[in-house]
Amino acid sequence: MYQPLADQLRPKSLDEVAGQRHILGEGGVLRRIIQGGTIPNLIFYGPSGTGKTTIANIIARRTKKTLYHLNATTASLQDVKAIIGDVDTMMAPNGVLLYLDEIQYFNKKQQQSLLEFMENGKITLIASTTENPFFYVYNALLSRSTVFEFKALTPEETVPAVERALALQQQRSLPLSWEEEVPRLIAAGCGGDVRKAVNAVELLYQSAKPRDGGLLLTTEDAQVLAQRSAMRYDREGDQHYDLLSALQKSIRGSDPDAAVYYLGRLL
Image (cartoon, one colour):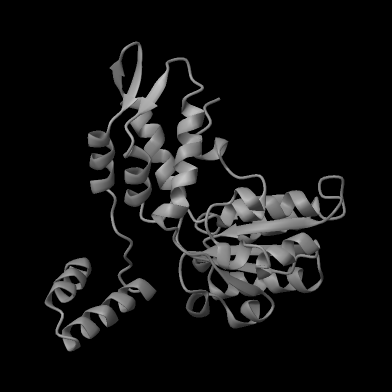
């Protein structure tokens, strides 16, 4: 069975996670919570590819809880109740850790229904969202959870993940090499999304040019992928209003270059 490169490289420990040093670095609050072993209900908020699912997997391994993964875009309350049915059975002897991805797609009634199970301790909820939870998550659920913001990675934080992906690809049948600038270009072009960067490595490998009995990843191909990388933007969320604010401040500060840049982003 084919396993995507991003899944093969998914970190198994906190030290392997790229970025998020503000919460996972030495002394970081989330790191201390995980190391303590008593996990409260959590909400992870941030862009795609920043480690939210990875951290949920690490928590499940450390606490020896059975991890169930639901996506709110397709899941129903029946799915949640089926998971609750496994509590205190051989399926989940140490309790259930429910990872609910994209919780903003659960309506208010669906979110309210989770409260009963959170309060009686039958499940520990880790919910993730790419939207601001203070706008999209029911207040009573928020009050019973701890919110952590995950941030888009810098190119410098992304380069090590790109290099690990390249090293893994080197273990395949044909010798693999790459031009010096390739890792940096991939890291800079992924928009802070590690998954996207690793997928770019996989795509580059699949389209690599044969050379001297091996494969070569070129700067030219890496630049093409980087140019196709869309900047993060949402039409109604935080990023939209951040860009509006930046445009306004650029105009007020008489900075024409910045004003044109932020106007272009909005358009």
